[in-house]
Length: 101
Image (cartoon, rainbow, N blue to C red; front, side, top):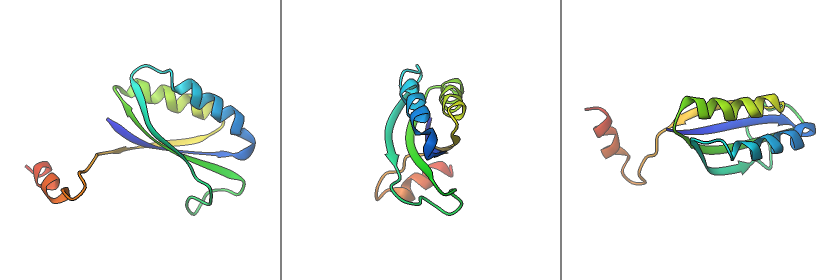
């Protein structure tokens, strides 16, 4: 299953969160597909002097996802994961029809 993960943390926690992120790359049962660091205010409600990282990951189990989120949380980040479904470009209507059967 694929997830978009949002990770918000105080800039002072950058080294700790970076270390936890590197540790997460070794967790079996998950694959990090993409990672983005927001260079500006990502969205309303982000506290001043905070960094936002957004990643796309694929996990085999809830245990793998929980291990990754726990590592980041222990490093001082606020983290949440949103399950996502890949949609074909130009084929959303056909995909929606398949889902409605």
